[in-house]
Amino acid sequence: MLTSLTPQRAALLIFLAAFATISGAWIFEYYGFAPCELCLKQRWAYYLAIPLALLVTLLAPRSPSLARAGLAMLAIVWLGSMVFGIYHSGVEWKWWPGPVTCTAQAGFSGGLPDLSKPAVLCDTPAIRIFGLSLAGWNAVISLGLALLAMAGLRRPQGSSSVSQ
Image 1 (cartoon, rainbow, N blue to C red):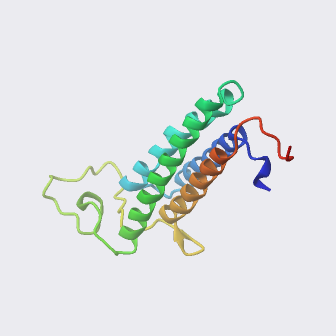
Image 2: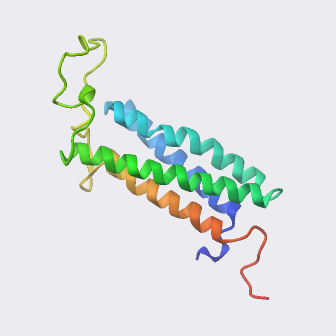
């Protein structure tokens, strides 16, 4: 199945999956599931990786070495995103403390909160789907995208799936 996964195809799949994921997050936000501070920071990986994956997709046929470097960068970005998703999930499950600015333990030591925005706590998931919060799903999706980038690295551009 993955025998035909070239670096270009891997980058294209990463682009499509990442774009679909961030679009899903925006849709959830549109329908009233406001993101917390940590949720918004988890999106940074998508804002970096989506244009990078598109660039790798476009450049891969002309520059295999650049495509491999781009896939390596994508793998690192997605592994970091996975770790951050695990951290946020742990905050939601109360396994460890989160930032005091967005958890139920938040006080007024930094002044009054901005009352023009809804209070969204980082330790309270807005929704769970099949037992995982959106932060948990971000960790799972990020791991999958990291593995996809690594699988694309294993296959040289332009090699066929038939043995010589």
